[in-house]
Image: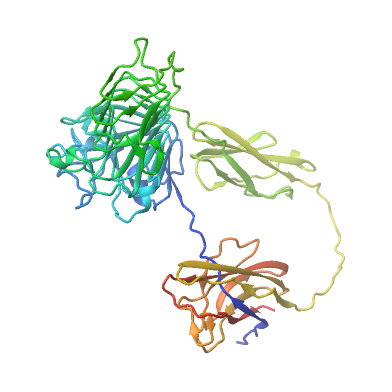
Length: 592
């Protein structure tokens, strides 16, 4: 067999630096308990989606009732009472986005038994709750970030006993536009929301924050605690030193609200029907902003406030009822509101965007012959889930598809000859909202024709042009950073295929930038992108050719962006001068 010679166009360019690695984008995972509202959902339980998700991913929860069961994490720094269980356990930074508090309910599964609590009461641990959010890595970045964001759900446990509806353990987070409903108490506990801790810290250390925002808590109250240890231990009545904040913002809370042993926080624009108690709460200047107080309550409706600490609690500008403030201990009630604030409309509604999509095949104006069959394809998406896609042709139903891929079969009718037919796709999302996208196809008249030849020739062309050298600018010694640089290229090819590659032909440290005899420890990385390939990844440059882009057809003046990445570690020794390398780019084909 005769081999086909490869045509090559070779361009050499000098490179001085490199680009940062490609950004990793978070994924979205969809859950539907019965797949009726979101047929394309991958999971039917939230815990399965949480387990699958990577840190910082989003879990979308479609309408349904979710019966969850999980085993708490347990370790020296994150204990759980023996025999305890959770409905849902989250131990990584995630966003849980429910379809709405009236649509999504999270409960413990009946299989957990009559109680989630363990063999003995243990409030400051990672078990015994309908939902537990716990931090498992002491080096995790959640100290000063929102670790878990939950919205648009109802959390309750009317049949299975629980120590809390939602527990934030050693971590931060936010619950918004949600309801924490009936919680059947387990032993001495049955809180709606708790923030607890098992660690000891320093006042100047990391900041944690748990927030209930535009939500309703109907039973059990709230417990924001900054002590630590097992029930009965002396440490449960002493400050741990962690800087922990509990916030109630624009929310309605039934039951007692308690801040204990160094806990800080803000209550603003909320309705508290039960007592507010401060037991050795931190009331002085906020460590992060000494100009303000570590605890304050304002613009809220309060029943009473008891402060057992030595400091003065700041509680100015609140409604206490017609009889005025009801307080115990040092409290600065300031000037109370003259009238009750307007009743809250909570939980706030969950925003649900209209579904979006397009008909991608046929794309744009298309000619379809009478007697021909086409297979229209619709791409559809929604912030929660697409329930179905229906296709019509000039208003006449074609079919409805309830799952991906949204593919259809259609042939022109006899009466369509010589007309333009509108193919319209109606996309329905999980909440019943609809969007319509369309395209037109032309059904030409039936004709006869005689062939006549017109031709032209194209000379074999394979051309590669590289722009100016890519330059990084100065490397900063002692600081870990990935530097970036770009240059442009242009490709013209009349071949059936083409391949663009890059290689470091140098015998000295192939793939590494050099400065005389000095070599950067980390290898140079490269990638190429064009309009048709926007997601290519960085790969290491070496003495072996690295394929950057491929074409399966001729191309003219295809604009290419050549991107480079050069990681420099904090302990990399950098020599004064310029680090560089001359790379060889090759455009080749096997089908000239």
